[in-house]
Image 1 (cartoon, rainbow, N blue to C red):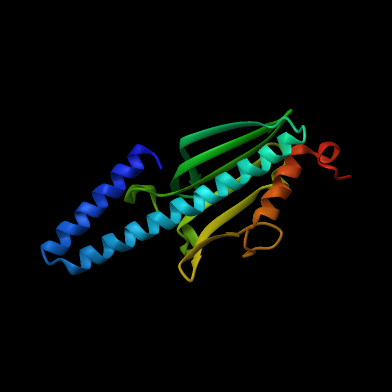
Image 2 (cartoon, helix red, strand yellow):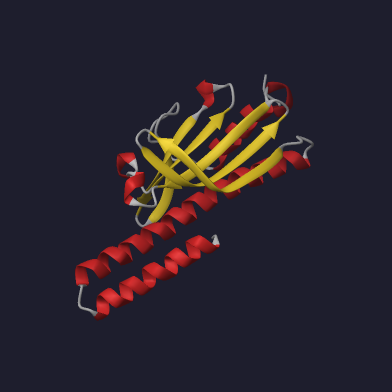
Length: 178
């Protein structure tokens, strides 16, 4: 969690306390929900990024030579909305996999389409057919990523699907595929 995210969480907690003390129950409930959703968002995005980086590191231990770059202040568009979050760029030779995830932070950023908490994209440079858009949803209070445009829409994303994207990055000659 960045310093800005920590400051934001602290400010939300203080605002919620002030709202409760002033008797603004509706506002306090909203701020409590906002804090809970932000925690779910942060947790889901951290899992996605950590899992992709871990799979890439595992491939590197087997000689893949994937270069890893991170941007913690990334912004990307989702139709008319702006998502603010993180970018992980994995590079293998001339191939690149961009893993970006975030959510709108202020009203002018718009909303997450589809009723989710956050959005993510797995974008392969030059291999548009391999790209996949993800939506962070909750099931029984637990965040989970689902594919919204891949080969199986609404399919939950697990490490195995992320591993498939790393294999595409490595190419058939280096991933053991033919």
